[in-house]
Length: 174
Length: 286
Image 1 (cartoon, chains in turn yellow, orange):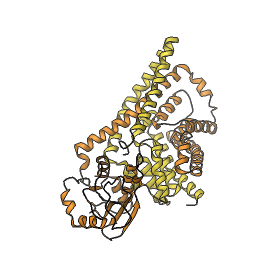
Image 2 (cartoon, each protein chain N blue to C red):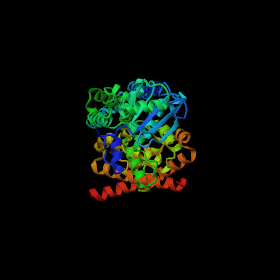
Image 3 (cartoon, chains in turn purple, green):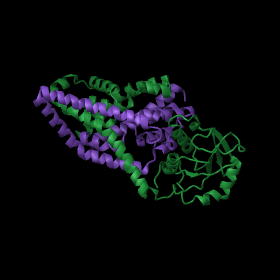
Image 4 (cartoon, chains in turn red, orange):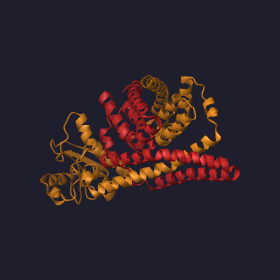
């Protein structure tokens, strides 16, 4: 949602950092190839094998991302996010956290604003915790760990977030 | 159209119906109904939100008035969080208009005079008729429009393109780990004790950060190398929920106590969640 409004500079900086990360790995490979070509080739083959295994899950990731972008307007997450510190508020905040996209620090300003407007610490913590549940990344997770494991982790993570929410409420006295 | 607002209405026990502009936000120079309509929505000092049904109104400071980068976004978030259905102003920049309309908020521009006058004109439906052709954000099938599909495609492409280089770096690094580090060595870093492995994995996940997909690839590859599922699960959970790298930013935004307590509780919670996941998985799968 926030893309395209005053984010250009930050975006360019982020792209530069991403380019540097990938560049340094490629340079490392290049250096290794000159020193130990066999090991470099073995590493490259292993990487290719991992990449191949990721092809199908990643195409599914793109499809789910597209559907989420088509049907879900991230700015309206503000409407779902609840100031209510009860169970309903926790569940709504969990839903908002699950459908939210983008890096975590991009959400801090909104959370800060919600906090200033009286949102409890519990719902904010629940929102941040549920960012660990990413529906569009599930295909990759399932490819590595299987359906049963993913279902268990997802359910327990959501339940854990509710425990966290109540813990935060208890600490803050909300 | 399935929107979060529809979901919210449903969860609140109300069927989602197309609203008839109950709440209108007018950009204003001051906090009274007699204040002049501010020319620019994004940077107007105040927004006066009028409930057309009850006649109640409130003046709120426009977070966009600071003129800081991203302030316009805060104004959009404010309007949406207040449940506003239409914005009435002198001028609204195309990006802000686009974002408001895509979130179901209609935008009416070209207004001047006082806020009270603007409300009166709006009530009579004069601007509504004038700009009806532009205002189709509540169209049930708006997501099928070519522009919406193209935008969704572009957004997904951008998000995907941002994710891929780092993911590719992680894949290359995991290739190196596979080639250089024997599986036995990696496995030997973990004792085999469920609790110790979980704690060790949680520590790793708390230090590392980034897109969760990277933790799946790293975790999956470590698992193949013989690292226990307890450690991998704790790593995946803490990768997102505990953020030592982002801690300063979180403390600055949400307060020191909140950030420290939240991260500490998340770390502690990761241990039983990881243990329960693997134990239940073992029971289920035999």
